[in-house]
Image 1 (cartoon, rainbow, N blue to C red):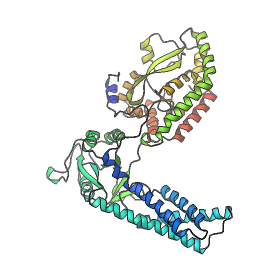
Image 2 (cartoon, rainbow, N blue to C red):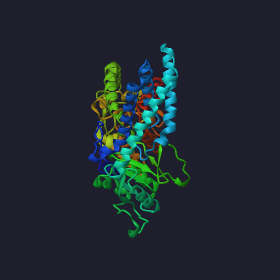
Image 3 (cartoon, rainbow, N blue to C red):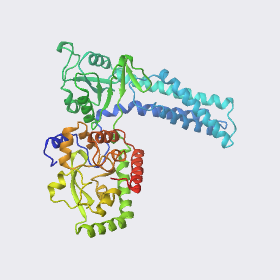
Image 4 (tube, rainbow, N blue to C red):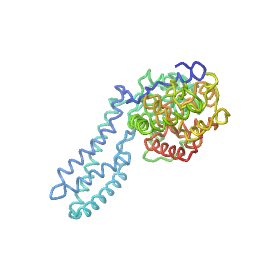
Length: 473
């Protein structure tokens, strides 16, 4: 990366991601992590197939199929097909019964609509038998998984953050093997436990966590309490998001923290599984597909408008209708951004360091119209098609200002974890032009952490409304 100042060095320290999203690499130790998720789903499917084969006779097969499909969907929606530390059929029983009641109601409604024979006592008994088969299959799977954990055939190498009283308790509890985790060491800047009291070695400071994870082959991190500032912990966790690890955290005031079925409890200590960042999800790959299709369609449909704007720019300001400027994108990499020229800068230094030309008297009527309607940004569809940008993402900035804003705003660096965008969450919330950089960084990081295809669509729709209404800049 060509940016060589303090901000550029900080950007260079980010774990690298390819410009086009790819599935995260999984180490050999990651396979057992999927055991509970896949095994519970497989157990449910096999149990329901057995129910259809064994209990679906005498005209009840159709009802059993509908019931099984709805029950399977309900169990998945309730989170019973996810990886878990605690496995108990009794704990899951209320959820399974509620899902079964919903499935039975759906089956009865389907029978009424399609004029099947209504559910009678025999069919209801068969549906109950299917639920019992599901519970039995789950109990068998959980027994197998528990045995594999006790024998250490399923043992996820785990790094514990915080070498204090709580960290010591976590290391002791997890070391018993009942939860499938194998603690390998602590990470802490200021260990509170004396050397003789530590059940595990201290492998480094908090900022060493990503390298410790790589060196130990760990695929799980448990965040206890350390003396490091919260800001440092957040930055380190964000750095770990590029690694193939599951992250659990102990809630603050965990002694009075209420639990629910999505909170893991290990020997009385609640653990909250941090949601994987959106750019690690399977749907993230669809973002690039949408970008290519959208940019290609936009260029094909809007080229007459771009041509008219280019002619107007040339008539107002002479030749050289395209304006090229270096911007910083994904992982701090620089690229050449294209715009229709609204002002001819005096020199390269002015182009690189002038924050805004909104009130510059040199901008003519054509330039002001294009900036107000964002028509000057249409050539960036080519940047999107090339892969420099996305349709939606944090807006790219020039290297000079990236250096400055990274030094001034601690969250600014992290907005470069995903490709920059033609429009963004901050922009549609009024943060464009001469507005707060700190607020922009907060909105951009919210987008990074909470991305979805629906959020992208929402941003595009609201951007279109801004452009049509002429409230762009």
